[in-house]
Amino acid sequence: MNSIYHGRTPEANFPLVPRTTFGRAIVIGLGVGAIGGLGMTVTNKLEQLITNRPNSYVPASTIAYHLGLQGLREHHPIPLNHAHRFGMAIITAPIRAMMSYYGVIGPFASYLFSFVRIAADEAVEISAGTSTWPWIWPINQQVIDVLHKGAYSVIVGFLCDKYIRGVSWFS
Image (cartoon, rainbow, N blue to C red; front, side):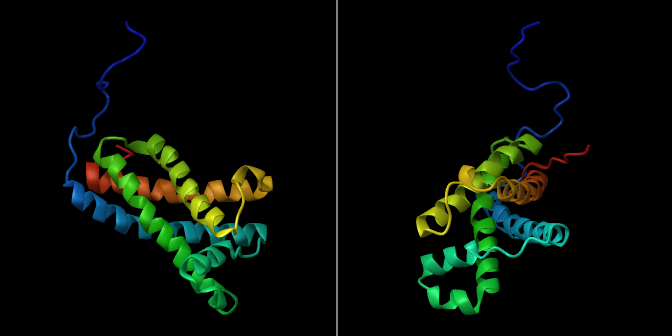
């Protein structure tokens, strides 16, 4: 048997074509991005209960810089944090929706997408001067960011695959 398999394995029971149009897949991506942002916020708060880590206001500083709202950063950091977190969650999720639409599905696709999500955050944070490259952060901060972005990516990927491709990860 050839060691390099070209094509689908017989066990692959997912549909060959998406269940929706490309445009609708993008809209689904926007919606599940909000759900993924909520999931990431919940995991963040649970982790803070366990680790006693304080809130980071890098997201608030980033969005305040890009929107020219630096004066609001001191008085309203929590709403700005949420605006950044949910905004980035919503605008990056259509990338995972496109992956699902074109058949790049499952947990491995979500693993790949987590790097897209981290890169998007770092691009806006570094451009605002509020962060540095993640590989020079303290290791505990790297672990925390990868775990939360990973949770987001799994939630978004699962929902995109379900609603765009008609795939259940567990059947």
